[in-house]
Image (cartoon, rainbow, N blue to C red; front, side, top):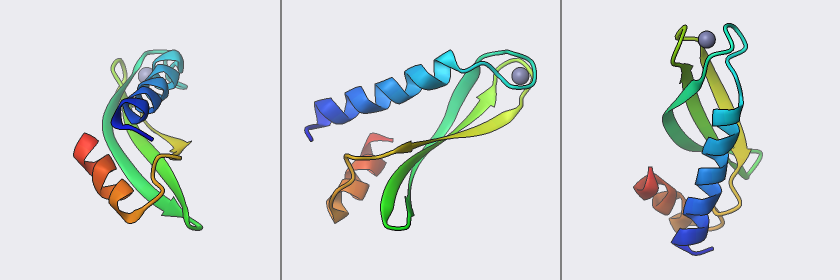
Length: 80
Ligand SMILES: [Zn+2]
């Protein structure tokens, strides 16, 4: 994957977050932190979000197909 494709992928994650209303008050989530984690050897992209209205916190998880090699993790950190 090129950096452009990775950016596109992360953008689509933010779209999902933007379309998801807060489960407490229906407000909009704001992305606070983006992290890459391995679950059973599969890279996941974990985005910690906070409701802009009530402060409710929620973590969104996405598979991270762009993390394929060791340097993929470093690249993802760089983009963060
Ligand atoms: Zn809320």
